[in-house]
Amino acid sequence: LAKTTQPISMDSYEGQEVNITCSHNNIATNDYITWYQQFPSQGPRFIIQGYKTKVTNEVASLFIPADRKSSTLSLPRVSLSDTAVYYCLVGDYGGATNKLIFGTGTLLAVQP
Amino acid sequence: DTGVSQDPRHKITKRGQNVTFRCDPISEHNRLYWYRQTLGQGPEFLTYFQNEAQLEKSRLLSDRFSAERPKGSFSTLEIQRTEQGDSAMYLCASSLAGAGRNTEAFFGQGTRLTVV
Image 1 (cartoon, each protein chain N blue to C red):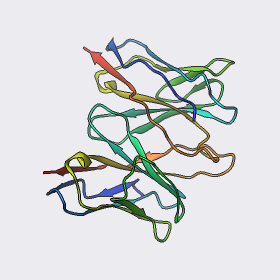
Image 2 (cartoon, chains in turn yellow, orange; image 1 turned 30 degrees about the vertical axis):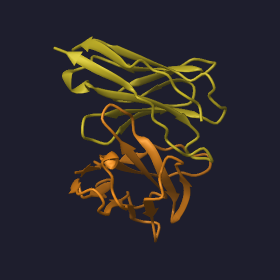
Image 3 (cartoon, each protein chain N blue to C red; image 1 turned 45 degrees about the horizontal axis):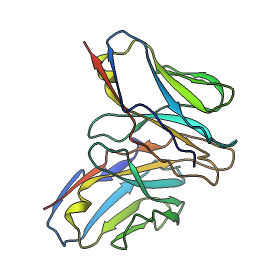
Image 4 (tube, chains in turn purple, red; image 1 turned 135 degrees about the vertical axis):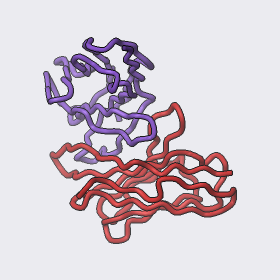
C-alpha cells in the first residue's frame, strides 16, 4: 500500500480557502486517492475520491497532477465547523488491496 | 437504512473481563472493517470481512481479539481478558466493493472502551 505524508496541522481563518497537500510517491496504477474528515468522537466521513486530474463535489475539490505522486484537497471558504482532522488515503479499495490505511492526518484549525 | 450502527456507544469494564461489540453495516454492503483509534492517532486497521469471510487480520492484533460476521451481515468484535491498553475507540466501517469499483467506506460512531 502506498504510504502517504501530509502536514500534521494547519491553521486558517473563516472564509479562506484551505489547501492540504498529501504526498504518495509510490502510488500504484490501480490506486485511488481518497480523503476523509473526522470530528472528535465521531467516525471518519468520506469527503472526496479521485484517480487523476480534478474532481469536485459540493464539499471540496481534489487536484491530482499527472504523475499522481501527490494530491491536494481544497476546501473553499472554510468555516469554524470545518475544524477537524483530514486524512489522505491511497489504495485499490475495490480490488485486492482493500484495507483503508490511515496515517495521523492533518489537524485543520479554523479561527474566527 | 440510516448508516452503520455500533453498539454500545460506550463501555466501561474492569481489567480481565471480556467485552463484545456489535456492528450493523449498511445492508447491501459486502465489506466490513474494524478499526481501533486512540487519542491523537488515526484509525488503526484491525480486520476486515468480505461477506462472511474474514480476509485479513492485522498482525498487531493479539489472540485476545476475535471478530465474526456469521451471516455476512452484522459483525461482532470480542476482546477477551481486557487490558488497560485496550482502552480506545473501536470503529466499524462498511463499503460496497468489487472489481473495478471504488466506493467510499461509511463509518459508525464507534464504541468507546475504557478498561479500569
